[in-house]
Structure formats: structure tokens, C-alpha cells
Amino acid sequence: MSAHDSRDGADGGAQTQGLDAIVQGRLDKLARLAERGPTYPHRFDRSHRSHEIRAQAADLLAAGTRVRYAGRLLAKRGMGKTMFAPLDDEWGRLQVYFKRDDLGDADFEAAQKHLDIGDLIGVEGYLFETRTGELTIHVESFELLAKALRPLPEKYHDMSVELKSRRRYLDLAMNLETRQRFRLRSALIRELRAFMDAEGFLEVETPALQPLYGGATARPFVTRHNALDMELYLRIADELYLKRCIVGGLDRVYELAKDFRNEGMDRTHNPEFTMLEAYAAYWDYHDMLDLTERLLRTLGERFGAGGTITYGGHEVDLTPPFRRLRFLDALREKTGLDLASLDDAALAAAAAARGVAVRAGLGRDKLLDELFSLLVEPELIQPTFVLDHPRELSPLAKDHRAEPGLVERFELFVCGFELANSFSELNDPREQRRRFEAQAALAAAGDEEAQQLDEWFLEALEHGMPPTGGIGYGVDRLVMLFTGCHSIRDVLLFPAMRPEGRQQRPGFSAEWQQKADRGDEPPPQAKE
Image 1 (cartoon, rainbow, N blue to C red):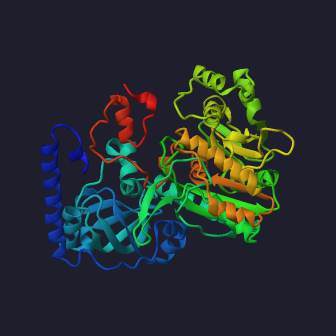
Image 2: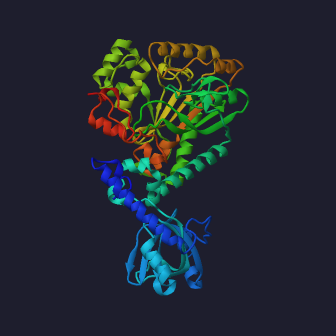
């Protein structure tokens, strides 16, 4: 029985009693183990970890070197006066071997009868290879480091996707591939920093709590600063503060930071996420496009196989140059319409006819964006730059130098989802004010994600910002790409999820309630 069965099913009371009995039994075993020595020691001196023992095995075997190793007990297999057990640390597992004749009756009985699956133990002994060639530690002494009072779930039956997300510590404890995934995430972030540093960018830090939110179109999280007696927002982007750095004379800056958007959740969206944003004075979006190709090539060489990766059954080539596709051209190809020439009513009708849920407050920008997401994005498997968006989609981008009504912007798509978003940044404070005012009009019409008019940012621009290229990379999505994960939740250690056991949301179907309990936000059309 899983430790978490008590939360499920109509017979929860009986299952809770069953769990209580298991915990009490383990407490009894803990009391017996305490008779032979400390059960929660302050530390344990390890001589090696599992990957180090494997790497040095030939020398350790030849020299008969004693090793001190620690990990979580994952199984026990007793055979009379001997017992084999896999012991798992961060880097993998090693088999350990207990023998009554070497340990003595008392210690062997303690290991055989009072150690449980899930216990953390430290062992000391020498290495040998079994008849089947398995590297094993012959235990000469052991100590309990921590007792697992609750049982681990059964790996192949109880470890649901939801349980892995809700209790990541169990997923990490039982699955080496999960630990490897998060080690790769850490390595990828180190590589991002090294790349940006080598390109001459300075890493900076900007406020996560902001008096005004901006830099993106999103609904914010709201909080309160008691000491200052004012309402603040968790940042939705780093952009407006990083641009202040450019105004101040820091020519190339970047930030790796958590951003927060109070919006829907799906396989590529989580309300708390990690972005790398970068800005370079005297660059434009063409320079950022070149930078992005260099970055993806570097990541492909570091984490792929010769610059290629496999994702969702597709072999993806990360070797530049990448495909270029203009935004309106892609939509024209899919719809047969020149959408930019349609008035608001005709655009809404065209969007509704193609499956977009048109609702009050949805402006032209959102209609175009949702049409693109629905019709074009899923087919962008190989790296593709989508270029030159309509102005209404990009209130912080500079007008296209050759195409009226468009702005200089690109998005990078790989395997059907967006990885990067870049502008030739708007640096004329007069035009920026007009764009902010247009966003304010959208907000007044009911758009909860429209940007605010930021007088402090406009004041900074009025001191003069040089021509600037800017870009934001979705770090979580990059990790998805290089680990083969199809849900952002799988690359976040502790993703946002609804509380367990909550009542069904009124008006929503049972199917969508189940999805909601896994953390998905039902769309408006999911109502019964």
C-alpha cells in the first residue's frame, strides 16, 4: 500500500488506519535499532559516491580499499545467512552485501529484520564482484542515518504523473532519470550563463516586486508591502528595468530570473517560470537573431548528438541557418486571407470560423496571436524564426523600417512551441507613450493582460536610450527540448498545482475537473 492511499477512495478511513499501523511498526523497529547506537547521527563521512566507486572500481578492487558509502535502501533480498540490497545515492545505485558471519548475529538481525525499504543507511566495507560480475560492497559495519517512517510508493503502480509532480521528492528518490533531468537543467543554465558572459553581456539583477508591471502582456500577481503601505506586483518580465540599465550606459546586460504571470496553465505554461532576458545597445533584431543561432548551435553541440536532438519522434537539427517565416505570410497561407486588411468584426468572424473562442475584450492582437497558435505553431518542428509581426501584437517593438504597420520582431519556434521572442526595441519616448495609451484603451475595454502606462519608464526613455536589440528565452522550455519532456511540469522541481481533495468547480465537466486537479486551468469553453 502506498503512503498516499489514505487520500483516495471511499474506504479512506480503513486505509488511514492501515498506514498508521505501518508507521507504528516502523517506529517499533526504530526503537530496536536505537538499542545498538545512534539512529539520527549528525553526519556520515563518505569516502566515495556511487559514480566514483564505479569509475575507480579496478583500482579499489586491486588494492582492497575500504569504502564508506551511503544511500537509500530500495530493496532487500535475503538468503539464509546473507542479504543483498541495492543502495541508491544521487548518482545511481550500488549493491551491498550483508553476511551474518562477518557482522555478528545482533547486527545481521538488525539489518535483516529492522531495516525497511526507504531507510537511509551508511555502510563501510570492501568491494568485490559477484559471480555475475556485479560490483558490490561487502558490508563490515553499517549505521542507520534516517528511518523512513512512511513507505515509499510502489514504483510502477503508485507513481502516477500527478504524484510525481505533487511529491517530487519521491520521484527524485526513486527515479535516477528524474535526478539526471534536473542535473541537466542545472548544466544548461550554467551553459547559458557561460555563453552570455562570453558574448560580452553583464549579468544583473532587477526587482521581482514592482510598483507597476510591464514588459509583456499578462495578468499579474498582486501583493502588498506592509512597511511601505503600498500594493506591489510580482514581475511579469524583466524588460523595463533592463532597459533602464541600457539608458544608464551598461551596453549589454542579461538576467536569469523567475517571472510570474497569473494566467492559464498548459503543457508549456506555468504561472512561475524562468526567463533569460538580454539587451544590447546599438544592436537590432537581426543581431539578436544571429546571437540566437549561435546559442542554439552551442546548446545542440553541448547537449545533443552532433548538433541534433530527438523530440517527440522528430529529429531536430540545431545547426544554423534556421528557416525564416513572416508572420502574416504564414497566416495567409493557412487561411487564404489577408488578415491585416480586415476590420475588427471581419477578423473576429474569421477567427471564430477557425476555432478561436472569441469573447468580449479580445482585441486584434489576441485574435491574431490565437489564430497563429492554433493554425501555424504546431507545424513548426524544425527551428523557425517567425518575423515581422503586426504592430498591435508588440507594443514595445520598433516599427519596421520598410513595412508600414509591422514591427521588427521575431519569435523562435522549435517542435511546435516558442523558445524566444526578440525586438528591435522601441526607444522613441513619444511613440512609446502612444503605444502605452493604446494598451490602456484595451485595458479599459476589458483586456486584463494589457500593459500599464509606466511614467517612470517613459521618464528614463526621455533621457535617451540608444538603438537596442532585446530578447527573452524561455529557460523551462529549453530544458523541455533537451530532456525530451512534453510538459513544463516535468522540468520544474515543484510546479504549481491545485490543492488535493478540493471540491469540483461548479459548472465544469468531470473530465476537466480531473485535469484541474492535475494543475491544468480549464478554458472557458470547458464549462458544461
